[in-house]
Amino acid sequence: MESNQESRSLIKASVIAFAIAILALVFFILPAEYNLDPTGVGKQLGLTVFNENQAATNTGAQGSSEKAPGEQNSVVLTVPAGKGIEYKLSVQQFKKVNYEWLTDGGEIYVDLHGEPAGDTSGYFESYAIATLPEMKGSFTAPFDGSHGWYWKNTSSKDMKIQLLFDGDYIIEGLK
Amino acid sequence: MALASIEAFAHGVDSSTRNFLETHSGVQIIPFMYIGAKHMVTGYDHLLFLVGVLFFLHRSRDVLLYVSMFTIGHSVTLMTGVLANIEVNAYLIDAIIGLSVVYKGFDNLGGFKHFFGKQPNPKVAVLIFGLFHGFGLATKIQEFQLPGDGLVANLLAFNVGVELGQFMALLFILLTINYWRKHESFNRFAKTTNTALMSAGFMLVGMQLTGYFIN
Image (cartoon, rainbow over all chains, first blue to last red):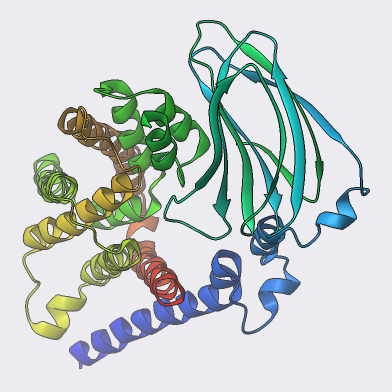
């Protein structure tokens, strides 16, 4: 009799644990983590927002609305001594970006490259690798994704870079 | 060329860690220890499992014994996993880690003893789950795609960091549980706590399996 009761209590505990887990998964965790929202509750609670934002930056779907056409952007970046930085734009396939940059302290290693959206393997394609004090040019994105510059300052003092660019993109900024 | 490869392995890592990897190579004891410790302290799956393991242990000898079994388990697979370059799917490993939490919660509720007449050797169980947790850690650190230069020393440092992080986490968990044990509510809520533990474990399993199937 006593054993029966314990069985029942154990089964009850397990079923409750499982049920709570399923509810939490369906309503909160899956919508927030994977944008899987069969009930729509996740969206109503605003939990799917993480993935929506990511999708927007990855595909550049909202690009044109964020920036007037022909507008030029300008940033000044600091590359600390002995360090590398990345500055990225989210660009859709076949969209063009014009750019120009120069340093305040001579030559710097640069790798202009793109990473396909959604890729997790670490693949990237370089469009230009050089060590220069300044550079001017343009590129047309061969695929949707994150495109931009990696600069590495091998000198012993910090370097500033002024970067000007325009075209069709969303700014992802410093990485 | 060297820089291009540095670039490649820096992808998919959080920015500060990545910055570190971009600008350093060779033996880096302290940073790797820090990454290991951080991973342990912020790894809620490991922490939940430890809560389950420690819940009914009140003799320090037992605590030491069980924690050592767990440590031996995860150190073995962490080192062999990385050195032998064994790539296990992170989602599946993390699902098993979730399952370890469910297992320990059910075990604490007396489930195995009741349904099967006897409890599977809990020390062996902790060792086995330790092995899985180590594979989890190995998968995480393999994502860094570490250069061969100084790999063993860095791995050892990472492992030491994991133990330090575990030690800090243990200290907090033990203090809390021991303090709580002195109160009557401990026994009253022991069942609820372990049920909650099981539930959290199920959530981890569900989350990781979903990740596995959609990715």
